[in-house]
Length: 113
Ligand SMILES: [Zn+2]
Image 1 (cartoon, rainbow, N blue to C red):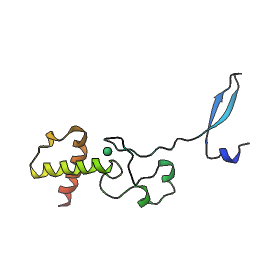
Image 2: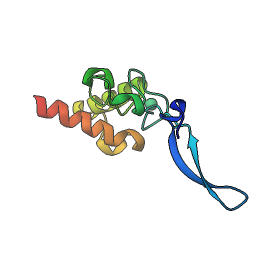
Image 3: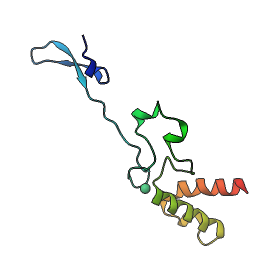
Image 4: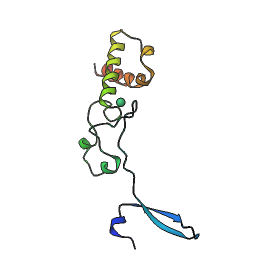
C-alpha cells in the first residue's frame, strides 16, 4: 500500500542487492523554462509540473518569443530584426544564435504591416 505522501512521487521498480524487485518512489524533478540562447531562467513562466492547473495567461507572457527567450535576449533579437529591416545590417551579418529569432520577429513585423 502506498503512503499518501508518496502519491505525488513517481513509482519506479528497483532491484535490491538480494536480487528482488521492489517499488521505489522517487521525487520528480521540477524544471523551469530556460532561455534558448543564454540558458537563463525565463521570468513570468511556470514550471512544467504546475502548468496543467494554471490558466493560459499564467503560463507565459504574451509578448512575441516570450516563452522562448529571456527579456535581454528578446530585446537583442528585436533590435537585430529592426536593423535588418532598416538596411543597417544584412541578415547574414546577424549573430548566428540570434538569426533565427530575428527572422521570426521580422516576419511578424512585415506580416503585420
Ligand atoms: Zn537569454
